Length: 463
Image (cartoon, rainbow, N blue to C red; front, side):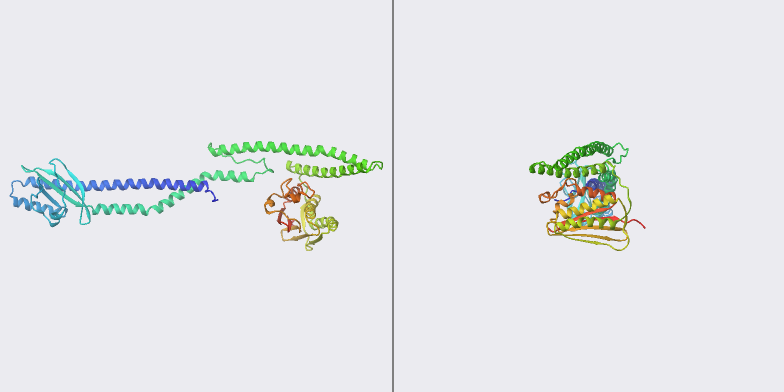
C-alpha cells in the first residue's frame, strides 16, 4: 500500500495547478486578444490604403483612361507591394494589374454593390488578408480590393506563443514554491500540535497542547483536544486512585488470611487433607501479597508519590549481590551461571540500592524461570567513559518478534508457553519504571527458542 501524500504536498500541488491553469487561461486570452488586435490593425491598414485609392480615382475622373491607369499603377506599386486591384461589376479588371503578383493573386469576387468583404486567403504557401468593398466614382460600379500578407502578424503571434511556452517551467517553479511556503506556514501550528500530542502519554497527562488565539479552526482543534485530555486525565486519575486504594486495603485481609492459615498449620491435630489445604492458602496468599505490592508500587509511581532518593551507589557491588542471590537457584535448576564484572575503575552511579537490587532481580528471575533445564545464564557489567551497562543473557524460550514492543506493558504475557510459568506480568513494568527513575535505558533483544538478552545502561556519576 502506497504512503498517502501529506496535506502540505497536496496543497502545494493544488496551488501550483490552479495557478498554472489561471496563467494558461490568461495566456490564451492574451493570445486571442493580440491576434484580434493584429487583425484589426491589418484591416485598418487595408482600409486606409483603399480610401486613398478611392480619393485618387475620384480626383482623376476627368483625366484620360491612360492617365488614370498610370496613376493607379504607380499608387499600387508605391503601397502594399502592388497587391491592389479595381474590378468591374462583371468581375473584369477596370485597368490592367499593376504587378504580376496582383495578376496571379486569387482575388475573391464581390457579388453585392453594398457588401464589404474582409477575409483570409492562401497563396504561394502564405496567408493574406484581403479587403474589398464597392465604390462608385461616377456612373460605373467598381470594386476596390487590396491585400496584405499575414507573415508579420504570424511572426508576432509565434514569438508570443514561444514566450508563453518558455515561461511554463519558471511559472511552475514559482507557483510550486509559493504553494509550499504558504501551505507550510499555514500547517506549522499543526506540526506544533502534533509534536505536543506525541509527547503526551499516561505519565504526563497534565500537559496540554499549545493554543494560539487566532480564532480559526486550529484554535478550536487545540481547545477540543485539551478538553479531551482533561477528561482522560480525570478518568486515569480515578483508575490510579482506585488501584492504589484497592491494593492498600486488600493487604490487610490477605495478611490476615495468611496468618490464620499459618497458625492452623502449626496445629498437630489437623488431618493431612486440611494441612494441604492450609498450605495452599498460605502459598496463594503469598503470591497475592506480592501481586498487591507490585500493584501498589506501580500505582504510587503513576501518582508521582514514589520518587526515590538517589545517592551515590557502587553499581558493581549491587550486581555482585544480585548474582550471589541467583547462583543457588541457578544451580538448583541445573543452569550454568556466569558473571563477568568490569574490574577496572569505580562504577559509581546515582541510585537507590533497594530499587536497583529489585530491578536486577526481576531480570535474573525472568532468566531463571524462562530457561529450560539445563540452560545458561550470563551476566556482564561493562563500562565506557560516560555510562555502564548491565546485561542478562539466557538460552531460554525467547520472545516472538511481534511481542517485543509490548513486553514492558502491564499484565502482558508474550505467549501461552510463557503463561505456564508463574508470574503476574508486572515485573518488567516495574523494572522499566525503576530504570526510568534512574535515568537509565532498559532494552531487550530476543530470538524465539534461542534466548533473550536484557540490557540496562546507567549514566555514571561524575567523579
